[in-house]
Image (cartoon, rainbow, N blue to C red):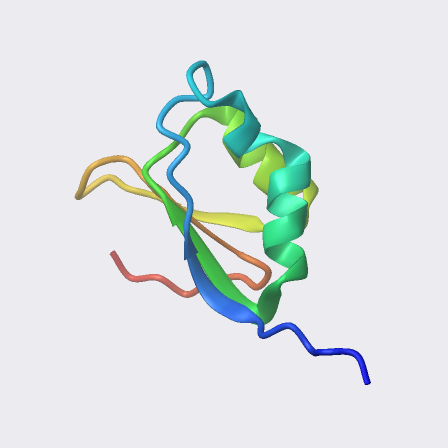
Length: 85
């Protein structure tokens, strides 16, 4: 019987800078995160870089929040999040 991989429900993705760590913001990286995540997963990152937000979007992850009361950041999820920040 094949071993079932556990699913994650929260991920912190810190690519630092797309120019420094290009691989962290690639579409296939977010696809893998999505593949091992629950349907209610959330992915947080301080990165607000367009290429990283685009990679998340291309994988069906909604970029739900870009901080205005705290340091700029995004929270991505497969579902729309009702965030009151």
